[in-house]
Image 1 (tube, helix red, strand yellow):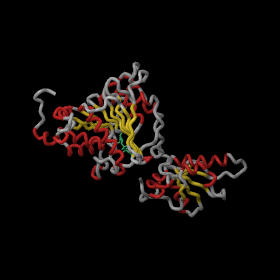
Image 2 (cartoon, helix red, strand yellow; image 1 turned 135 degrees about the vertical axis):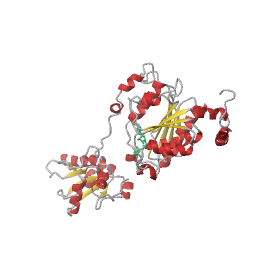
Image 3 (tube, rainbow, N blue to C red; image 1 turned 120 degrees about the horizontal axis):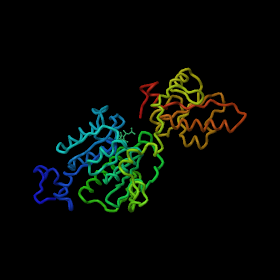
Image 4 (tube, rainbow, N blue to C red; image 1 turned 90 degrees about the vertical axis):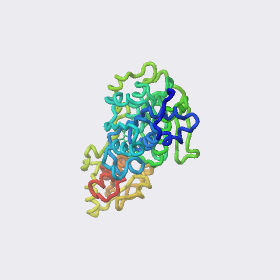
Length: 402
Ligand SMILES: Nc1ncnc2c1ncn2[C@@H]1O[C@H](COP(=O)(O)OP(=O)(O)OP(=O)(O)O)[C@@H](O)[C@H]1O
């Protein structure tokens, strides 16, 4: 801080409550004012992070996202609201952030971050926040942070749990690849697994807090991973991580150069995208093993005696269900499949789930019973393509989408 550095007069009142904190002072506020933070993902984590960064007076914020606001986002993505459904998340978030603090600079970057644009887009900022929800982007952000020499504050949240880690902090700071040279098993998105909104609030706020600590010099020098479980007692645990690995393929001696990031296929490295039956347009019945929602609807309307098994968890079955369907959660069905086939092998079985993925596993498990019992009549066992999501789209628009 230069002698004579000052804030505009009104800022002393605005930021006074944090400026009087031990170790923060005028110099802390000036550092925030001069700092820039880019938030990748304006969703469940990005919204609370942006909210606190803006309120604290970080001088420049970048908001990156390619998606639009949906109704199902409002339960946790607290910068968006009923009026901004359908708007780009970047615009919606920027609008809200400017209402909190009109004097900071807000950059809106409405494009997917990829290996082609990452270094160009991120290079202008001091700190990167990973508020995304997928493994390829996490590795891309980590490699880019290493290549650009910037700290990366990474958050994750699912169900009742969350995780926070600061990567690439200082010359000894480790990166994501030091911890996980290969991508960990993918655990599904919030859409698939569920998420309590306040859990993303906890982790997103902590990401903002870490960024503020780094900018003002109040951060821990030794990296650790913070693990949060809303149902845990105590809810927080911290694991010391040590320093970076000399053999790390990204930040070790032979690490990636910026040019190599352009050529790296992050999606393939992380096992490729999860199949999305809806976007692949599989709406018609495939011969043999599958049935479309329209065809199932016709069969049910026709009064046929069918065995319709819904393999969602009980909590989800309690939210909504097809008439006449029975609930056997996937784990119970695969543990004891023979229990759930009707004695009369002429009765057809149809398996349904929420999005059309678990039902395929269940149907395959039941079909394998027939394979293992030669001589018995082959039963008809089909999964319902696209699950209940397709039902609400193609059969009954009043059926709940969640
Ligand atoms: N490569 C990327 N570039 C830009 N934005 C990204 C990228 N990867 C993920 N995101 C954004 O990160 C955000 C993650 O937030 P979150 O998981 O809460 O939202 P969501 O994807 O809307 O959730 P849901 O799984 O319920 O649909 C999303 O808005 C998503 O568009």
